[in-house]
Every structure is written in C-alpha cells, then in structure tokens.
Length: 138
Image (spheres, rainbow, N blue to C red):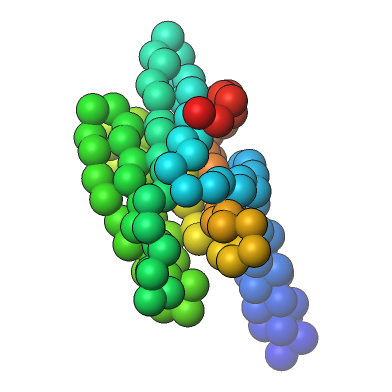
C-alpha cells in the first residue's frame, strides 16, 4: 500500500514539475493605442518578425492586429472571458508535430487612466531552439 502511495506521489510531483517548466520565457508588455510591438524570432539560420498592436478597447473587448510569417490576423481579447489570449506557432509542424514552439499572448489588464493595455507573452520551447529579441516599440 505504501508503495502505491509513493508511486502516485512521484507521478503527481513529476507532472506538476513538467507543466511548471512549459514556458521558457515570460515577458510583460504594456502598449498604448496603435503602439506596435516587434519581436524578432530566431531559430537556426531563420529570422522572422512578429508584430502586434491594439486599436480599440470597447465593451470589455480589445481589438488586436498581429502578423507573423506573412500571416496577418485580427483578434478580439477579453479580460473575463475565454478569449483572453492567442497562440502563434513559430515553426512549421514538420517532424516536431506535437512539440511546436509557440508564443502565447495573454491580455492581462487595461489601465483607463493611461490608456494602456498590459499583455503577458509566454514562450513555449521545450527543445530550446527559439531566441527572441524584443525590438523597440514603434
């Protein structure tokens, strides 16, 4: 019986440890309206630019434009809903179909006094292949 509890404890501990290390980098970014954040994504000999900015905050929804690798998209993010974040895969799926590195951008808060939106950027990169350079806002 004690052996079962020990094995169960080790399994639970190792799962919580593995999930705690899922994100290699966490960055907090504050942006004003139409201020663009640029992040240079590097892996191997490849360099790609990830850009995003927000344009409108109304009815609790933040309208955000983003582009990465010639793919342009628009998201509406909310603070108290399921749509708090979006995910951008940084490499094509290929051989690493289940372990594709990605950036998760999460809308954290909106400051009405300064008219700034706060985001958290999470980098998931289990094989440590990705390097991010945070460029100056424009």
